[in-house]
Image 1 (cartoon, chains in turn purple, orange, red, brown):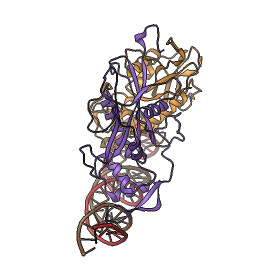
Image 2 (cartoon, helix red, strand yellow):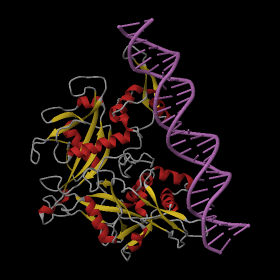
Image 3 (cartoon, protein in one colour):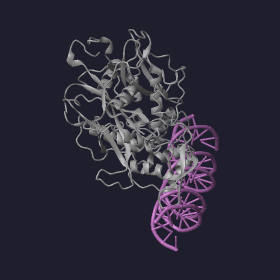
Image 4 (cartoon, helix red, strand yellow):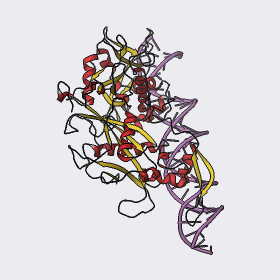
Amino acid sequence: MAASPHADEAVAIAVSTVIFALRQDDGIGAANGDPTIWLPLVRRIREPFDGSWALPGGPLDAHESLADAARRSLAETTGLAPRYLEQLYAFGDVDRSPGGRVVSIVYWALVDSAEARRALVGQNVRWFPADRLPRLAFDHNEIVAYALGRLRTKVEYSDMARALLGETFTLTELRSVHEAILQRRLDPANFRRQVDAHGQLEATGEMRRTGAHRPARLYRYAAAPAPAPAAPPSSPTSSSPTKETTR
Amino acid sequence: MAASPHADEAVAIAVSTVIFALRQDDGIGAANGDPTIWLPLVRRIREPFDGSWALPGGPLDAHESLADAARRSLAETTGLAPRYLEQLYAFGDVDRSPGGRVVSIVYWALVDSAEARRALVGQNVRWFPADRLPRLAFDHNEIVAYALGRLRTKVEYSDMARALLGETFTLTELRSVHEAILQRRLDPANFRRQVDAHGQLEATGEMRRTGAHRPARLYRYAAAPAPAPAAPPSSPTSSSPTKETTR
DNA sequence: CCAAAAGTGTTGATCTTACACCCATGA
DNA sequence: TCATGGGTGTAAGATCAACACTTTTGG
């Protein structure tokens, strides 16, 4: 299809990614223990929307898969390598890009805090708190809102929250990830029972001592991460069809 | 694949749809009360996969939205107008199409039985039972399997089963839709309580009498269909972000 | 009266939620 | 010893699954 005799008939394909990470500070300057959701954006340096902030992404290369394109553009623009990557949605409204017709296949990704600190930051890459974004290029505000919704519904039934943490962690840390995403407090006792009912965590034997109080056990995930994003049949990591599929 | 400077760099976009409907007969010839899931396929009349059965679909026109493209190709190839239409997934593996790189944005749709009976059937369009398909063109077997999985998980928490029925129906009919999709028997008593706990059904006052037994009340849905497929922000019917999103 | 599907009631099991309470530590 | 978060116990409430039982029809 591409460049048919009528050039204006061409539809371009782009791949973009919504990247989430947790940060301690809340953007006002204070670092009050509770982490919140942040995401990196890149500044556009050409029309349309020159100067606006936008999701990292770029055109699809003919020889790479969609997920690879997402990973590549992530590495190129932000220097990040995600722990979790899943296709979100294909956005293709006729008028979503002023310059010409573009269908964007959008992925969403999670990076852990250590990785997020390594990320490039500069004139053209900056982190924003997910719930206080400026006006973004194209329909990217709506895309982020949709991705946030997906993050919130999926954290409740999958183990993808693990991608936001390091190898080992305390149950309180894991719970605070859930709390940051769901934006409400969870009962520590019930949360503990829920997670170990799934039987995926194992204690390392180590402890972590922080304040003037009892130290917390460290845990790690015993099983491999859930059979991969939403089991699209031919995705890199897909395997047996479990009930981990997108609901 | 068209004429860009580097012809082999072009990536084509296609839109295809997996259409589901219920049919009474089971394909062996007998019409034993229990409906099963069927879908229409079209025979390819060119390479690659000339002569194979494939999902209805076609290239994306530059001036139509993705969902419109799905609806159009549905109407053109099968004559069907779906009651339910939702984006399923974008399939874009590098080698999924022998002829050249193609990214397929796949929708899934539901049509009611009356509509399904109206569908074109001929040399190049035929209905197949969803669990006994021949070898299809491209990766379409995997796509159908994925769509079936989505249908099965979604029927349990959304009201999309209504799209497979007419305006009014008995609770037994609604239950048999769920049973056909889930492939297991459901307790009539508990099913009844579940559905009217959602408070969406209202009795019409009419009855339907079938066999030598007590007649059944007819119901209709009071509320409009769930705020539309998975709330992709800019989709035609999306409105308030409910918890109807894809899980 | 009988068979069969429609529809209601009941009970025990399971899951959720709230919250009381003890434990271990640094200050 | 006090404050604080880590961790366990428990009981009320909601939800779910199984199944007995009554109702209404055609034959």
